[in-house]
Length: 411
Image (cartoon, rainbow, N blue to C red; front, side, top):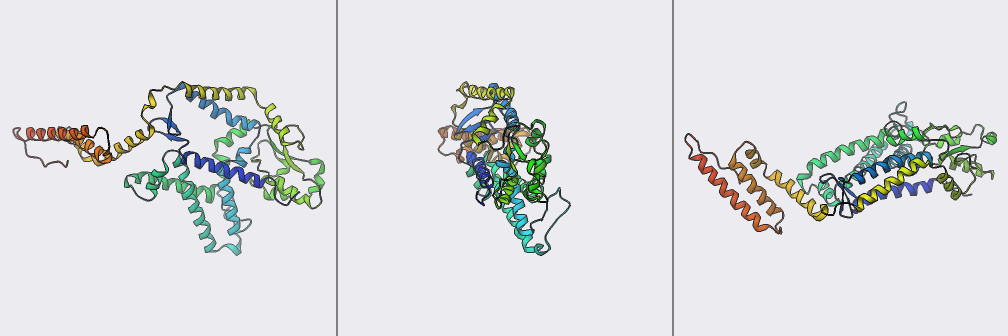
């Protein structure tokens, strides 16, 4: 047995691997959500939400997958993969390092607890600066699901002032992330996480959980070491099904380190149902599969089948226009709607001249934004034709009895 915690380093690898997947999958274009066209984008191929079979399958998977984890591996997702828990642990670690081992700044605490020797302005400034920097980085992650990295780079560098509204929304997310890292942390898990709420309803003693060897209770009299290192501040020697244990294994590592000096095994271990805690991981996985609820598993597999069927039978006529072309067209339309706002406003006031000039403005703007457009000749004709109609309408209005000359509208 070594001095290195057996579960902590494994858990760190899983946590960071999960975080990298969450970042890289949308950043590399493997998966993205396109709200404008109501579709998923997988490797630049659109998967439309209009398929009832696909949507039903996804709904079944999203409902049953968490229940399967509640009933089998318990809260392993929370302790080993959830990004929120990784962020909360990072906040606790840095707080304890800069403000003291028992420091607490959480909203659910009894108030700020700071070591007197470390209650300095410099420590607070370093803590706040690191949290703020982390917030700016983490807040970008959800945006990757909806925008390309190039779009986000232009937003951050102010390369396109049209993206200012997105940047303001990004700042709001930064503020929320900062509040989460600095003060909220596990409070969000306990009272606002839907996954945790479902876990409290469906978790059973047959799920993976930390077990305590009560027959050797004398070996840990007046110890309390496991409770000291517990992330969720519970008593590992008396965990109930409704407790907020996240199966992180920190208490098991702590107990093993303490008993290593005497050459005896620790009193804590992971256990499934009534099976022996000393079984191998292969045997534990087999036990998990045997204890899986057949109805929930059947619905989960049905969801997978429906999703696959929905993808296979998706109408082929819909994605004829490449996604990149659709995205470019929407971007040009957005830019031109801003550029031609004056003409559009006149058109809405039932001014026919304004309507003609608005049409000419959109065609001219489209040509400016996409000079290589295959319909460039048609766009030029659109500009000339609508400007001619606008001048004719202006002349007609000017010669009407009692009419007054109007200022020429910007083309």
